[in-house]
Length: 423
Ligand SMILES: Cc1ncc(COP(=O)(O)O)c(C=O)c1O
Image (cartoon, rainbow, N blue to C red):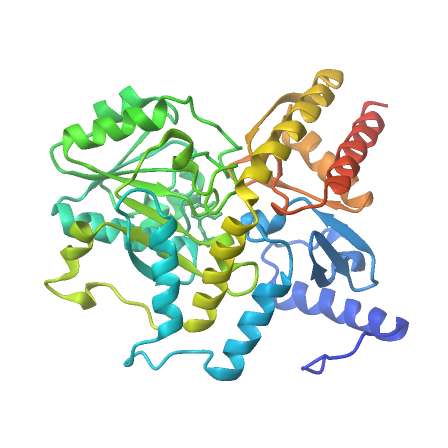
């Protein structure tokens, strides 16, 4: 394919591009040893996105109820984010790394303004796993302790540090030895955290809702109790809001549901505005001061780049201005109710429906039912996917501004797909 590709492909070009994409994907990127029939399906070749729709190479439209696993909280190509980012490209896409960049400074200010409590010092990076790496290092630096407490089935990323605190042995084991000082306790059990904390514990790391763990919503007293425990035991609380952050669960941050202020808050995914990758961890003045001895204890070449900072600033502004967390809370609750009713009509396939805001999981009885449901929805032009640590859970994670009729289409398509599977 010749780049840049600036025109709308005609029918012959569509076929050629699709064939080339499938061949190159399978030859150079795909990691499974065998090519499945599905991997040859040219309809899988994506081409453009707009709002809550993704178009494939043939122009077929799919309603995006997956939202890039949390990237597309503002939908695809939100016009205000795109306009701001284009303007920044024309002025200065990347930073000198020597001078002060006003765009990145502004993103830091905006994040501080909306962050809970006295969290105000931000380190920008490029992904979720980097945000977690930075948080873990900061916790060690500040406390001068090394041990971490995490939860079973949690997901915090796949670089070596974040993988060490990810609660799924199957991902950790091939890469041992990782950080050895980690205890994993059941999610939702505050007493287990108290028990696991030792004299050398630096921090407890938790997702407000376990996303990849299969959309597990903790009891309402969990975070307040863990906060109290961490404060009493002199241990930092790291909130991994990489997936829940910026409105996903129906509050700007997941921890806001319980008025809990963590010591370090990690973000990525939606902070990109759906346009430029961006990650961050935000903490207090006092904790950030751990870097005073040597600010270069932690750094990132692309971390403060103004293109990502523009996207982050716009993501924060639009999410707050358009009251998207409130919308996700309201519509998410309605959707949850409808999906639960659907689940009650299809107990042969669905075990449970749960979620918060627009982070919803449909737990099927096994992985093959989940897979079949996902494929049937694809056939009905609706995108969803399974949860990484619990593949029998089909997750629903649409843009927070998704038009309501698309939610109706999702429920109808699920209903029709479940009836098909039943027969
Ligand atoms: C809660 C959580 N933390 C961290 C990560 C890792 O983010 P990334 O894939 O950007 O490294 C993810 C990714 O799904 C996540 O859901």
